[in-house]
Image (cartoon, rainbow, N blue to C red; front, side, top):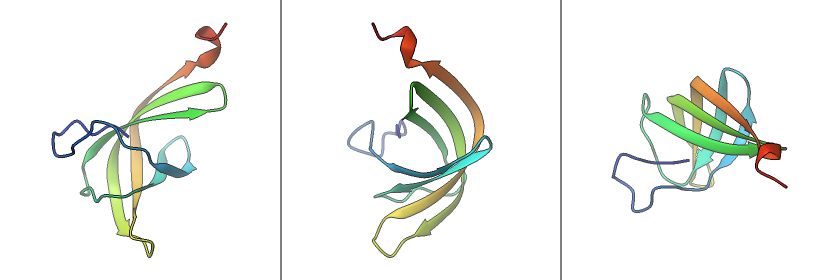
Length: 86
């Protein structure tokens, strides 16, 4: 996940993507974000890189101290890694 709001020390952070569909995703972060925040996610699935713009719909603190985020996808673009390999 990229954070471009200037509040974090680094631009990108690693996250765990627990669930992914055409309309939304659920992921875990180590720091809290607010409901209605806009996110830019970049993930790799198989031979594709997917760039997702989404809105945080729900934030829940988990027992392990991380935060679970339900994100509604507003825009996405898929890039094939085959074009860049070999």
